[in-house]
Length: 346
Image 1: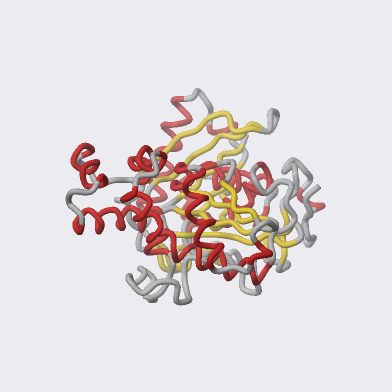
Image 2: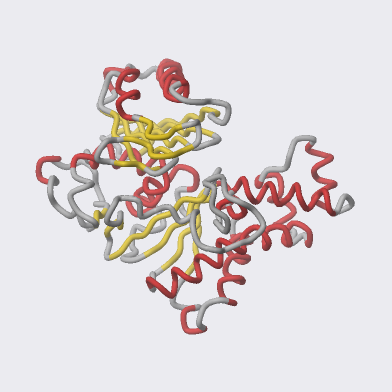
């Protein structure tokens, strides 16, 4: 069996993959937003131990672990370049192996999500697509000719940063104009709070009083489904930078589809409607019927599936060998046959 861990700035999602049935048979979640430095890895390990005990699974039955991590990953050295938790040039794999006492394969969390969706989700039958994951930050990925594009330096997934997509907030990375501070799940929730301060009698403000804690995207789902004016207005404002970025990428790459994943995907079709409405304002008319904007099928489990795939295929053994890597339909293959090759989907 294989364990996949999708480590984000707010939670870490765990999945136990049974190679015989080829599916995730157990799930678990750990809160991570108060963790810092090496204590993040220790917390992952402690949760792993207690979780396995709770599901009556022995550690020796776990062959390997796939770890999807927030932040840019230098996969030649298995180091996180700069991420939450105070991680700068942080040797994640080295420290993880010290705790878990087994091989831990590392991959960027957004790339893991796109691998997961290509393997088992909305991208399974697509040749070319983009994916955006809205979480504590904004990640993403590109699949070209059934292959995950990683770029010349292995950093081709930082879609949340760079450019001039908004001028309201400075990103935590230090750049102004990034889509992340507004269009991430965190950014959307901050937009709710700003709106509440400006409109204390709004439907969102009233909902805030009922929930007592700060509103999350999930809290607002009922209002969105009722087409509530205040909730829709907030979402349109928060998602404008994301939709602007999507419009540029559609003209640049001409994909089959754009997949939206992460926590806000729980909003369902209303989320797609808002993004599509904005994208259509900034794309040429003939693209509207050609490029679909769809929800990720695996939801918040996409990164877990991707981490499992990476571990199962020993993906880190060869990921730096070429600029293009694809996701095969089945990870249960001989690793030696994969090295130094570009893998293709069936």
